Length: 416
Image (cartoon, rainbow, N blue to C red; front, side):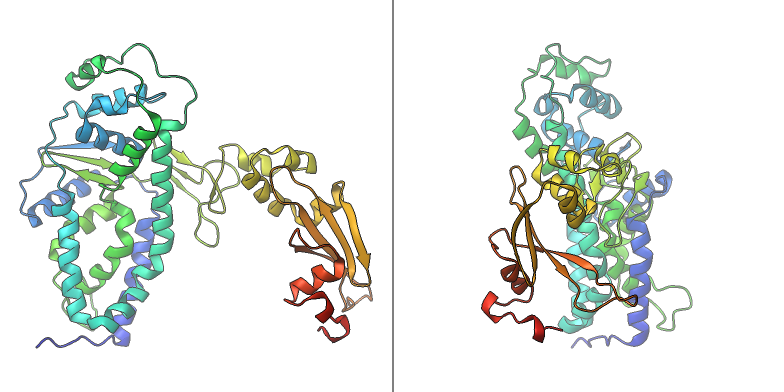
């Protein structure tokens, strides 16, 4: 009969420390330690019972890694799309050969994870597992998973990011793999290629972005020096190679004979909630120029941040994308936009003034202007603007809505 391990304060501290340490791995922008990463891959292959790979191919971003994985999986003809010819040719030249063998992600990553999770679940029991996960992976997972999703989205959009038609002339290169491209038509379907690129990202081992689940097994299998709990609580040796690669590199794709590894980002900016965010420049960028631009987690065009520094009502009205326009409004300030625009006074009563501004391809901006019932220290009363639903037709109805009341139920004398 297996004895369930108690989640003592010492173990809880170890788990929390591992989460902190692995969070730094997940957001690292240091150059990859290529020698350490390759040693880790060899260890992962040994643990999976596989021969060591014959060749390592390094690329400068997961975008190029996905291109390489698609080429190795489906051949060069699958990626003949507008704007991708030069990128495909560059990756083909780096690969030199398409004879990589079959993908081995399941043996290298999936199976060891399943085995380690089964051992940890048995060791901790259902409640202990939930508590341990709460101190480690659950803390890291939302932000890392969101980041991984954004990277996958950006990779998929490589096929649709160019407006120019595919080049008529075939791409040629001195490598045998590139020569194979010459006979392939240059009219690939962009939607199919986007789906292919997204699909091959699911075959990647996520390197530093596997930190969210590796941290739990690291805490149980590799106690810090001097830990009062003594030796490892869990045999996590099958994950040692994966952990080593995670600490040293970005995403990677394992095949029988070839392993495609990629660099970590050189830029990674987040807001206070951990979402990708940067006012000027990319929020996430890799050495080869693959980048994601975001405003508080929302994908935006490359020059959107610069536009936010010089907003005006006219610029906001001119923005054709309704979603981007909402972000502009939030940043500019709804009340400021209202006062500086040609707002329509819809209604006025003792509770305040109802204003409305119509927005192209979006619901109108409707706000109630009210005076604070509590005077400031100098005796003045501050004016506030409360945004209300567009169906509101009177000031009282709008203010009542902010309290969750119907207009006839709202009595300002009783509100505090």
